[in-house]
Image 1: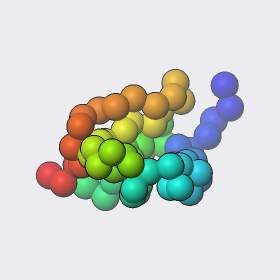
Image 2: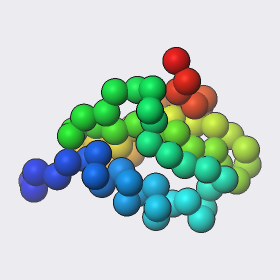
Image 3: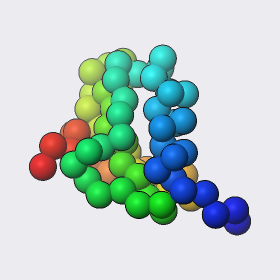
Length: 68
């Protein structure tokens, strides 16, 4: 598998999904690394979620935006 820095990839992901959600941004509260990045988003249904992006794909971490 190619060695991709997911911090860079996450910025592209946010740009790609922004028209399908109310808001999306890379979390500034949770620590990201080259191997895992957390993205906060709000769906069109007004549900807040924190998504983990890894090489394996996406996973909902929690149904709230990481503020702590």
